[in-house]
Image 1 (cartoon, rainbow, N blue to C red):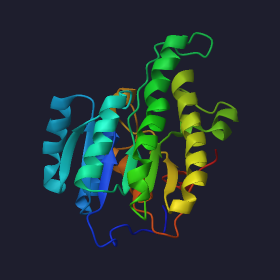
Image 2: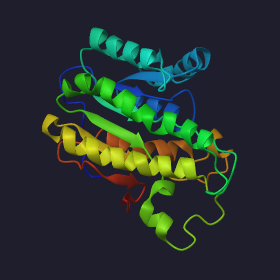
Image 3: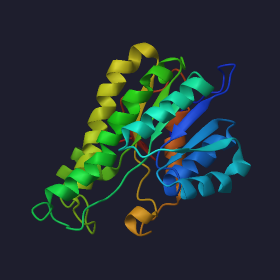
Length: 250
């Protein structure tokens, strides 16, 4: 997908944090990163599920559970302190945690409570976690941030005729991913001077709990897109929206 790749040349332990990683794309992303020799902090809201996920993929490498609800400032601050105290830096942040809170399937029938609940995790969670971890990412010297997005958040695709035929219109979820793409651009512009690359990843229509396992792509395929952006070399892109076929229209 992306030609440039190398992050393990820093002469020290490479550390990654993956949010919402007790299942699905997040857990598989953590596994694939661990296979590359990266120390992975597997973030999850539920302690028992998070610990079970970390144990399940521990054969891949150094995977450690951290309790992290991306809507909880205290937990975010605790993880930031842990990274600071134990490693002194963070090389990779994967903002993977995401929800669909809606039960209505048209823009006109969506409720404010449903949209707000989706944004709390999908958008505000990205801001909370990213801002809290920018200080340790700056110390990487080669930081990477990957925000999980979706083709459903692309304004270019949504503007096309029948862009999501057969897919329920979830205005909160779709627009939350559009917002994530906007955040990606702004963070990428601000963090260029610190050699931190920020990109949005579209894993495609992956079979997960989020869509009732109706997706056509495997978690392995979806996570591969995310990992490729997480290990970009110095000549890699920043501020882009990438899927399995490369850069996508916003």
